[in-house]
Image (tube, rainbow, N blue to C red; front, side, top):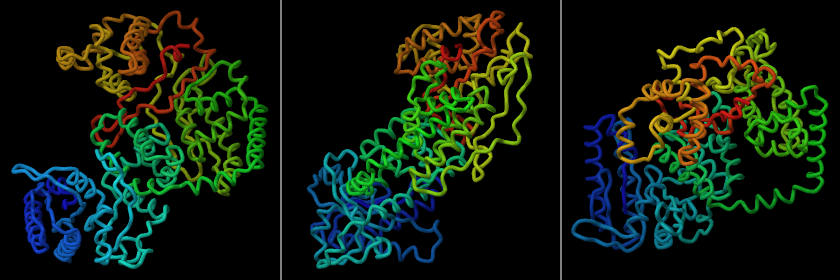
Amino acid sequence: MITDAVGFSTRMSVDEERTLRLIDRDLTLIGDTCREFGGTVLKSTGDGLLIYFLSAVEAVSCGLEMQRQLVDLAAGLGPEEYLDHRIGIHLGDILVSEQDVMGNGVNITARLQTYAKPRGLCVSRTIYDVVKARLTLHATFLGPLHLKNIEEPVPAYQLALQAEDTGSSPQGSDDNTCTLPMTTEALLANALRALSTHPHSLRIKKLIFATYQQAWENDPKVLEQFDLRALLLSLRDRHSTLAALEDQLGRVVAGLNRQDLYTEVTEAILKQLQPWYARSLVQTRELGETELTQLTVRSLEERCQTLADQFDQSPAALRLRKLLYCLCHGSWENDPNLLNQIYLPALIQQVLVVAPQPQDLRYRLSRIVKHLNRRQQYTRLANQIVLTFQTLYQSQLGSTAGATALVESTALAAEPSGPSGGAEGGHTTLTTLAGAEQPADLTTLHGTLSNPLSAGQDSGGPRRDRSSLFDLRSDILQYANPLRAKILLYSCLYGPFGYTSQDWSSLNHRTLNDLLQQTFEYCPTYADLDSKLSIIGHCLGRAGDGGQVASAITQAMRAYYPQDPNAALEPLVVAELEVPEPPCPATKDREVASLGDRPAVAVAPSSARSSA
């Protein structure tokens, strides 16, 4: 048996003296109780005890009695006046030495303890099978648990003091129905309840959202529009096993600054979803497949063909194809020949896969539009897409709610008039893609690095003053991890970074501001900067995401260089410079004043595509 105090470290950080007094009181009670049931305390873990028994029945009886006494002790007290505890119990061999207690049995017990609810027990099925004939238990089957660093799954049960805490009736020796596991829906409801009330519930939703949308979102108003249950169901459809989901969560966490914190968040998510994933959905999938008749497939194809005809008849047919292509492929395509060769009904079906819900379509379109220069025109086209897809979503989902028509913001600033005669001449206000039920701002606007030069700007000198680089640093940090930005600039100035102790020491003595100033001196023109950073980014390769970081830095530094006098010869006006944001942008988590939880991998439009 292993016991553990819930939230002990957090309580210690708030009131160390009181928490130490409470844990000393509770551990004394636990130790006295275990001796009454023939248990032996082997060691203390700080906020818990490791205990062994000669009888499984005595161990479980003791665990239940410990929790009863602790609950009675907390009766009538405020939350700050007591501690809740978890208990894990397993049957297995242990090795006891003069210094420590070890063995696979100890490791399994420690992992099981983390699955116990506060004021409850988690026991392995080995234990449960031994004691169920002799004890009346309020148990819930958790399924086979994949415990960390344990090779084989361990089936386990949750034991509670009260029947209402389990969602099932009391369990006895002769009632086989008592051992039936909870329904899939009940397991999902339990997971949702635990994740929603978790201390890191906001970060949990951010991580789940990022894994589903492949885009990091910091705006709580945006996150509120996406139901956590719907996100989890969609993720399960996409990642049918817990291992696959864990791998995908790990990929997202690998791109974040606070990897240790989000690794803990990942473990919390997987722990709560483990019982739900353990329940097979084969029957549900088979039912869905039988319902997908040939008639349904044919009907879907016909509807997609109808939508394609509507898009092709629009005066802005090519731009609509551009938006749909970017939705599906995560990159912007300006080649009309390539776009016109695409079979549009198939592309529309692909949109349904990428954005299976109406709100997914709104969200993804808004992320694309906010980084286009002609935002007003493309917002209208995005609205047109959502409205056109409304009937398709209704037929697919069988819902009368469908997608809500998007409206243009009344606060949209007029497009600046200039020689270009379009939005290229200045910075237009972003028209948010917001439905009637949506907040005014569907996405957080971090600014764009793709705005072309304003017609009214002086082309004889830099458009921004180099004497203060605060804004430049802010622009870079929105799209690139500061450490990777420093490594790339350092490599440009002093040669490829070798990740040696000498390189790290040299890098640590240089600030990002210093490296930027030196880069301006080393690259007298923007063409030099673009060329040198592109080359060094390519040299660093995928391991450092050099190309993406280089693109982010060059685009941010562009405004600090004099305008090229030959720029008028470049197709800046003819080309629309519609450079959208890739599908998983590097945006900063704004929950703290510092860098916060922001993706460490920079994602920005490539310099080659931007200049084109």
